[in-house]
Length: 574
Image 1: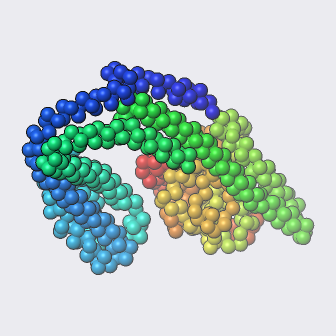
Image 2 (image 1 turned 60 degrees about the vertical axis):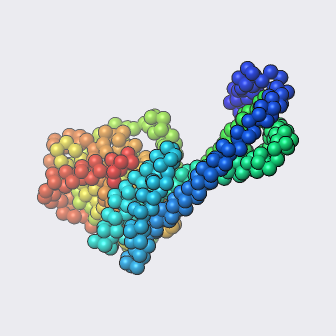
Image 3 (image 1 turned 45 degrees about the vertical axis):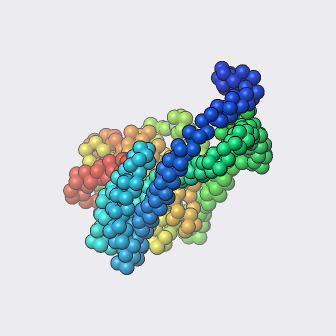
């Protein structure tokens, strides 16, 4: 509503400014136009016989033009059919890998050059249509040579790629662009044809009138004058009334031609200004209503997702506490389980604060502690914790074979690792191995979390770090989640001066990695994994800490993947 004032002023002033531009010669408007029409009738009587000969010649020429327009329209429709055959034939072949579906494609391949040549030849007398015909010709040739033929050849060589190619929208987009050019071309040609047919009919009528009724020419011209008055005054008023009725019925896109004389033209322009203002106002209201509706939907979905996410930490707390109540455990193991319960309780509190964290991140107000964090111990705790979530998964942890420390907020880093482990388990519904690997290379601490699950489809990889994005697979399988975990994980890692990324293929699992600046990494002696990383759960396997052979090559490959993912997140390359 804030724009109502300026729009209303524009609406109020446009009729006045537009009306003044048309008053230079019309005098009193409609009266002057009618007088001008009477003078034109008188002059017309003097030239009626001269018009007879010109009308006959014009009639012949316009008949030829109208016939040519019909030929142009028929040729354009035929050529458009060939383009559709090229697209549907290639798509049918991609879907079925059956050569029979290429029959219309081959027929279109053989016939479309002749149709293009005919269309270009027929439009040589019309500069605009000729240029459009040449543009259509170029677009079809580019589509055929650069997309359609290579696509068919590729499918013949790589039939296994057919399903992914069949869903590719690039070819459909090209054909749609060509189809739109055809629509503009045919619409223009139909208008030309209608105009030429109308002109031919008018010429025929005038010729018959002038030739058959010499003395009645005056009456005929008077009739023309009356028709002019009807078209100039009565018809525009009727059209305006009909347009107003359609707008009242909800068609706010209705507009009038503004070529009416005098006051009629001013009325038409004022009507269009009013309709445009009304359409903008209604569109703005509808947009705001849609925004409110979508916001309500997002809120409802978020509340549902958060409710599901609360179950995971509560289940862990209940599981470990029940284990402690049901069994006689040594003090050391009891203490370790209590630590896990406390850690999970903290995670539960952190989960409830995810939305607040997201708000702080967006406002660049995320508060992080700066403390020494032992990543080996943190990873071991998280692996132990998440191993209790599923009996179908085996969690393996390969710690760094030397002390691995960073400066940062331990709880936030645990939140990141916990999110990656939770995702690895949730998106591996058939179970399998989840491997966590940590190592120190140079001054960088590297962590990899690999699973054997569903993987991430290529079309979703660009949005994986987008707020509230969960993908189709998660919704179809009923996998709980808020769509905030990876968003916060990325912001937390970047706030620690690190990076996070992934390498994934649909159906083959995912590997998420993160890199953080190491703190005093070289000042501590390496410890044996068995001493530093006790793993009590039966489904967790601690791999012996041995040197990562080719460690620099592993990091190099991961950095390459990171650069590729980074480009994909920018929407350029995946």
